[in-house]
Amino acid sequence: MGLERRLPSGQGSDPIARLVRAGQSGLEAFPAPDPRSGTGIIIPSAAYVSSHTLTGGVLPPFLDVGPPSGGGPFPGSVLVGTVDSLEGLLRIAHNVGTDPAGEIFDLRSRLDGGVGPILITSPLAREERLVDLRSVRAGGAVTALEEPGNGPGTAGLLVYDNRNGRIGRVAEAAGSGELPRRVAVSNELAAFYDVETDLVTPTSRSSRSRACRPRGSITPRTSRPAT
Image (cartoon, helix red, strand yellow):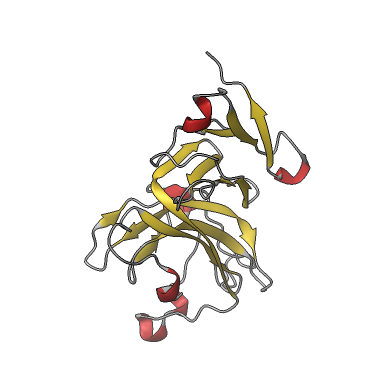
């Protein structure tokens, strides 16, 4: 997937990355007559996924796994992560551990000439907002990522829930303090402090995930922080 025109550029952009979602729904996890055939590649957790440079170095971006999606015959898991370079490698392990029963796909019979590549049909790719990598905070199913600020009232907070694959946004903070702001995340709640406003009226903006509304929608709320 090409994102050359979507990446941040120029000096000072190192901690800034593009949040993207990508997946496919055209690749069957196991070929017939394997009894596990007939379904897409379902990735159980982020432990199966890693990001690398072209020379094999491991990268530490935000990377998570959402529910299956897509309009093809074999909907597979959707990956959500950050992109901040033109080229890189994404590795999806067919197994974590040594138990053969833990395999999530077998693509050996579909390699071109026994080597590769494999044509993947029905791709899915969605561009999201720019985020500040210094602000990433995770807590169970919920991850919070702050947008880079360009002055007062320009940096919102994105909240991703890997149980339903939804991304919500808490409105911009009024202040223009240095990033990242103070962000706290639990399994159901993400909150950040608007530091400049706190000096006058101590408040926090928070976003509750599935427990707040049906279908995992994100609702901005105002509450007084614990002291």
